[in-house]
Image (cartoon, rainbow, N blue to C red; front, side, top):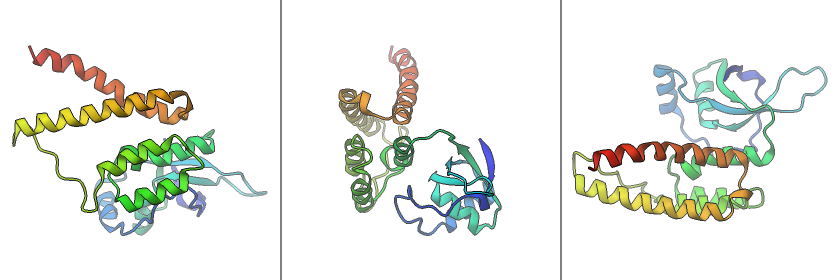
Length: 201
């Protein structure tokens, strides 16, 4: 993790999967709290006499928000040896496993990356099923409706089991960074199971 001067980052949009849109609210949050989430960068080949140059892999909205704030550097995870395949996997981790996107955005992403990452199709399809034009319905909280919360959690766990089973069939074809991200989340779940079983006695 390091701070990288913004003027060392190339105006390259290879991995920008959607328009950055209005970043004013994000800029306000960064202005108040600081940049809590780093962007992901990888080095670009240098031209003669040129200093460091970086390519943004993930974090385009954060970059735009920092420029709006007239900041001169960005907090970044720098990936020196990131291959094209690994970079595409990292760029996709947000829409496939994180914040919900509109179905139209996910369809556009699928069309762009189909040739680069054949394994991403099922992950993007699952993300599309979770999305909706009006956004996802708010998840119930245990205190508000414990029965609805337990039911919804069971349904999501069932869907996750199905996704993991599908991933198992082509696990070796997934890029290392994608496998690492999946395993990181599954290990966290595994650590929770004994605690839940203890409370279930």
